[in-house]
Length: 375
Image (tube, rainbow, N blue to C red; front, side, top):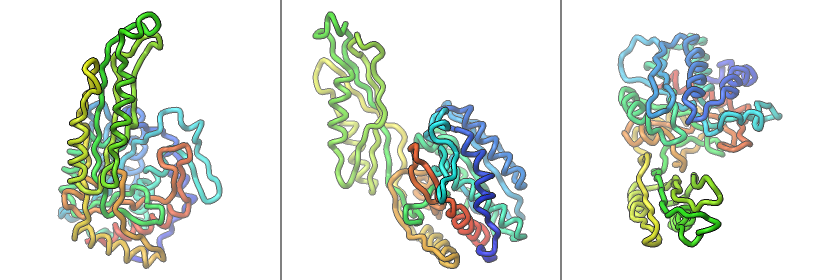
């Protein structure tokens, strides 16, 4: 099969993608994520897939697994993506769906609904061309990737373990490259505890948890080196401005290129202590993504994809990347994984999130070539 001959149409793909993008699906709103799963499940069912709804847990939304009919029972291809986004309900008025020349904007369009949708279009195009894939194909859409996949890691690893290849349509790298490895990431929960008092009448009697958290934030972020980074991205504290705050909580993130560097970073975080005897500060470990280091099976998969891309007239340079994905889990398992197969664009997680429209068809042909030729 020649992927160049497949009639991908970017404008038609945008029409199909728009309902996905306009269905806001922030991770922490399980019902909203469920509505997005409904849309994707219907599209997959119309394509002939057998749909299984997998109940969410830990307060997160459901997942869906779609299996396409195939005579073989051997390990096949898993196309894996997430349908949750970082954008809260109500983002659409500020970041509406709009086409502006070569770009199209919308919440979650780049990370990663565009890549998920082009994967479905690739499956459609292969089927319409009458091409039978060499291996069975399964699609798994999950609901909590943006918070580290705490409720779905076991599902991801179990499903990946039944497959030979994992294709992840997360966004492409800025130069159009793909991801063949990812850095290790750890999350931490922070809690500072002070002593309450009336902020007007008895200020000196209190010990502010917010003040303690502020001190700790500076200490945490100053631990950043070239080998391991630290950042605090979430803070909650206080309810009344006239009360000295008793409790302040936060969340921190650490990222490293090597597992041993992350392990040292984790140890440093867990060793943090209060700045004084009259306040408390505690760090507990959250979810962790293991380092995914390139290996022989992944290299062979990349070389296969690179040859397809070359036949289509473009290059996909391989890169290890910061920023986690569920490919961390499958790559660390030693399963041949190729990430960054999705759309090109930019502004992820911001009100400038967009895709490059012409990348829909170009990257769709690459995905179609992989689906049709992997064996």
